[in-house]
Image: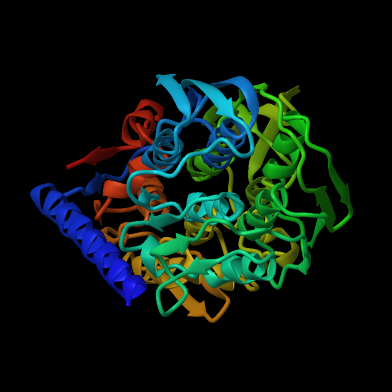
Length: 461
């Protein structure tokens, strides 16, 4: 009965937040007006990597000593993670893109006074769930309407196998309550799908588990967690598809430099590729972790002119400058092996496909249906509105390249959908209005201003 009352209170609080956000959205159209005739050229640096920004706060908070983070993404998603650890007693100071974190050690976190709000971030909720599973206090995680509909059983189930105690909504969705006093035990877990979020959740829980935690991947996924753990002095063994970590290791504070986010750079890689021949755009200091470069590989297969230059290593992560030139793209069958390496970049890759000559086919990407929106269906609907032949399938889409017209498209509050259709305006014959763009700041603060600086004709209302 007590649990039911508690869950009811959380739902009411969550509903109240949703109503507040709805009110805010109604006061602002939150739309992008994108006019044709633009292009992308010049030299820019996109904001810091969101995946690494989340992880940098989490690991530095449970490390011993003070860590300094530069290049931190000042978007709502990563700031929610920062605020959550402040709420758990971690002394964190930040200004612009620099953050100072005084770590409290593996067992130094304290119970927050209220629920931790993850906003729109599935990465934050799933990773934090693993970290909280080994604490000695109860915590409830909530999110916005979109996040509250996203599947969490994929992380809840392996955590339960580690003896964690977690309550969820009836469908395995948020709000999620992690009960304290859990004595975690290590597991040997084979991921049913390629997911860096599930892998990372298990590894973070493994820090608190007795024994050696083993995770086996069906296909490579981004390895920022493993790399960053090593940077904090934690021994993580990777042999092929198998990752191993022994529980109880102490993390030692370190300095982290977050490179520019390749997922954010992807919008400009496509923008540069569909710009007129002879245009050139340089993207500086972009992270090119080999588990994240699927967007570059796919674009090159389509005939994109992308040069990787000034390669170097920054804090254990490969970084480079990317030069992209206008090109004549062609449709391809996207190799399924590249799907996990470009899972977040497909909305804008669909725009590249719409501008290419011939048909582009994607399969093996059913994960796109459970992102911030059903990205397969939402992108197909928008492309059809703009005169493009797009046929969604259960696990992908078929797009016939053609002429992009104007029209009004719905982003369904998905930041990557909104930015993708903004890029489409470069090749459009009429104005494109993109609705419900308020969440763009979750991952790419300053997107509109940066896009305008390159020559893309987009304005926010």
